[in-house]
Length: 451
Ligand code: ATP
Ligand code: MG
Image (cartoon, rainbow, N blue to C red; front, top):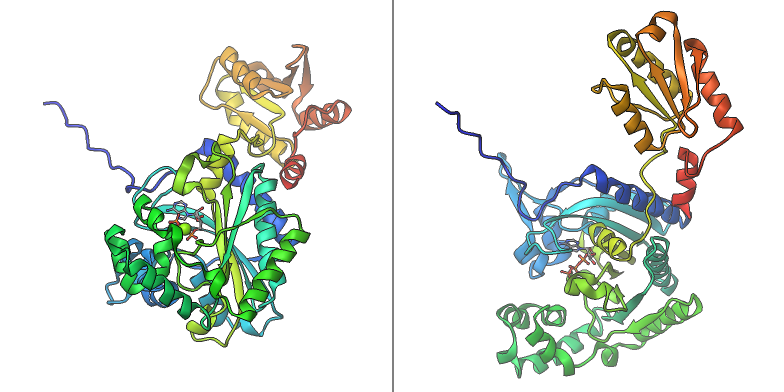
């Protein structure tokens, strides 16, 4: 009787494996991030994947898409309602309060690189698990902070080889001036409610500002003549916004005033911005072409039970960054140092002795590779060739008995028999006499990634 093949289990819809060949992007981006952010005084923070669902209800807003439609929740055996974190700012604000970071010198500047979870419709650039880099500057209301955050976002894209992005910027005012605007917006859309999608009909009741963030063409069309927040800003919000723009002018960051830019989350006040490609080629992702989005959130910490604490932040989708880098053919160095040595092992005795030899190269800081499974010298030399190593070390039965090894220069094919105990020093010496192409060491890789 033939055995039935077991049915394969698939990954969860909208969630992906990141395969070895993709890792070079992740490693490269992480290096760039660390280099830039640590220079600007940000420290990394990591928060748990699971949080109490109340945190997001309170911070992001129960009527937001993220909470009303997209959040993953689970009930524990103990009966607690938990959520897989859909965004990083609320958890960071919670951690800031819970760990007494409010007594540290301000502003407190933090960043995170973590997976987020949203149950939305998967498509290119939109997944159910995705990674975000996020930055938060907590405890400073000044315009300089808004401008610095935007400046860093712009420079980060630049350092990743992604030029051609504009900062779209707007101010959504604060609790003093926004209510008047909301009322005007409500009047406007109420007269046109027939043209709105079902979601936006709801938004009209619950959170009219979000209609401006709708991705449906009809709603976008309907919103075209809507009142603009700019005309409703009170004096202090207007001045704040004006100063942010002056800072950006000074820093030569190109921006586009976008009167209908709002954010999908409740906690924003005053400045909001997104980094969007300015050419149609990279705009291929359509709605998914925004790489970075953020703004000021002066009320969040207070909403979570802390003292009144102004703050600003942004988040960047790492998968979208990788898509954009591929689209632009950005060169990314291969992960890690290039191997210099390939150990060819022929037969049982050499294989047994090979492991300590291999380890002594690691200790000496010389990158070596080998292939335990293959027996023929031809196939092993082929791999050595493909890896582009400078030396092959040929270790056969005879050499294992004699305590020697054959050192072959791959370029010329010239071979020499060397005492086993001297081989590491000999390789070291030859590498020093005639170094090979960069990047060939960890240090050089780091330098290349840091530019
Ligand atoms: P959108 O308007 O696209 O629904 P958003 O405005 O809610 O998203 P934010 O929460 O501000 O997005 O997220 C900031 C960044 O994180 C986005 O600009 C994007 O790069 C990335 N991002 C957001 N959601 C996803 C997702 N589902 N998959 C991949 N990346 C995402
Ligand atoms: Mg958005």
